[in-house]
Image 1 (cartoon, rainbow, N blue to C red):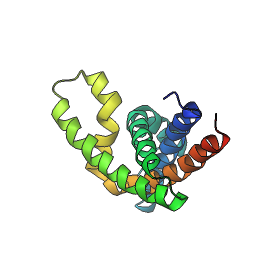
Image 2 (cartoon, one colour):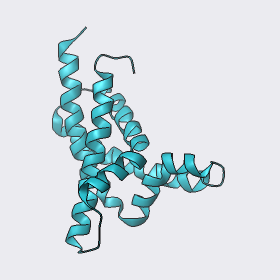
Image 3 (spheres, rainbow, N blue to C red):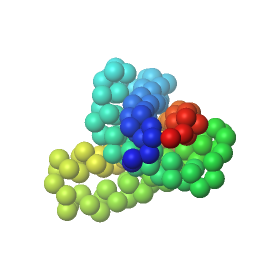
Length: 147
């Protein structure tokens, strides 16, 4: 994490990833006419329980795309696939680690993935796509500047 622009990259990953996930949740609940909290409340909850998965997502995406730099559409496709795989992986690990970890630590690290996996796992795909698109532009801006 000592690369140039890492702080901006990971901060944007958490901010944009949580916002797009909150937007996906809000829109899905709005379309199904389910009772829901406001968008700002959802965003706050997504920041609380989604920061850990989003940081892992951003780290893996940056490593994966540094192997072969590509265009924005390649980052978006990689973001869609990686978000689905990460949700599945964290959701399955979460159930195994729940008896081992303290309740607060489990909630901070895995509750977001476990809840989304149990309710509607398709919601992470558009959130991963938008987040990857934004992260592409941030990564490109800092690599173009160079040291």
